[in-house]
Length: 133
Image 1 (cartoon, one colour):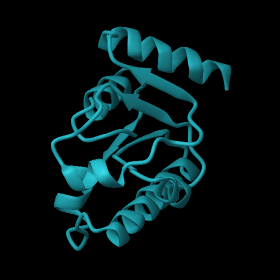
Image 2 (tube, helix red, strand yellow):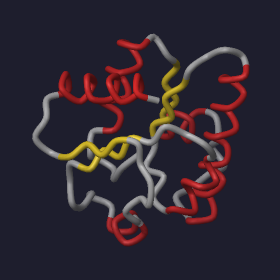
Image 3 (tube, helix red, strand yellow):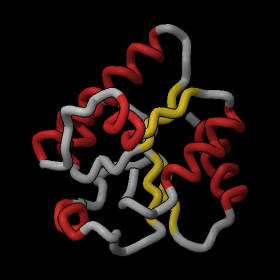
């Protein structure tokens, strides 16, 4: 999770290749599957619920999943459900003022990625942290 433009999708794509897991990108889901959803707050909660439910269904079938989306508030994170949370925190503001205004720093994360690392370093951090769990 993290602000738009922070590098969530770049990390998720590379990590999903390295770990051979399913990558669910919220923009892809919103544009191709859940076209009824907008960026209104109530729709963001629904998106979190749907992303969480789909991840759970895939997990129950034996697949590991990376769910890649802003998930801007502690409420949306709660609605997603249980997860290993990586906060990609490379930027202070996104190009979307409404998201900037809505975004809350997370209460609990498993890994906080800040500015200054290469993608390889980030991948290694995530993998090492996952091995601790």
